[in-house]
Image (tube, rainbow, N blue to C red):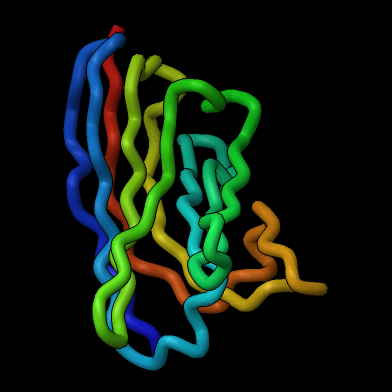
Length: 130
């Protein structure tokens, strides 16, 4: 069972920055794909950024709305992975609850599809004021 714990959320003004962290524990088998999803006030959860933690290149993918502003990265240690989301030039539309997720690749690829991710953290709130 993979456990994921997010931290680093908060309230900032537009143009500010935040860094989210996702600490992991449990079996590493379930952590090939790691991602950050957000849920704004609307019910649809959006895949913000994902990373394939087992490829040497750290293959990543981003939602168009955050490209150039957000960066996902990983830090590997023995039997655990910490995943970060560096968020710069934040906008009010970035407001929402941010969730860390872990899953298995589909056909060798990690997608920003929440259905691919079976383990989820409790989330951390990000609020951006104008």
